[in-house]
Length: 209
Image (cartoon, rainbow, N blue to C red; front, side):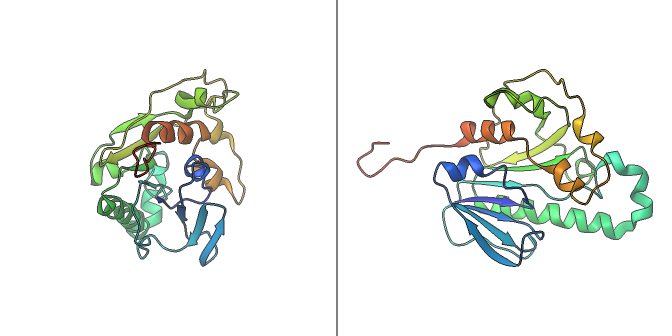
């Protein structure tokens, strides 16, 4: 089983679903309860209150909301008040606790945020264009500095960069209802790269693949 927290798009788990893993994507934006599409189960729940089914977990991904902790919006921190910051850190903390509890490799993603101040500095930094070469044809030719906090043996994939010909594409998305989801969607090249670096084919009883 693969668990992906605060995941609305399911981009991160699609390579795993295609390989036969049962994938749980948990996000409050999904309809309450569970809805299954192929090997992906969309769960409408608060990650602070949800626990996965009793099953071996292969890997955990988490994308806690960054709106109230991203340094790009620091000028609005005081206007939002302590409540917004506390809620964001609570969601991040819930993702950390569930990821560590699983004992599976994990990756928690956020842009450059205040989390580095309140917890610890990220383990890795990347831009989507760093992994655009994993796609056919190559894509994700844009920049968006992203932090990863990892643990339990997570393997950071080897970059296959493409030229960032689209520049900072996400910053050019105008006001719209789904702007936050578009900006936070996982780049498909990075998702594929993480799968190739961390997927370990299971062997059957006779020892063959």
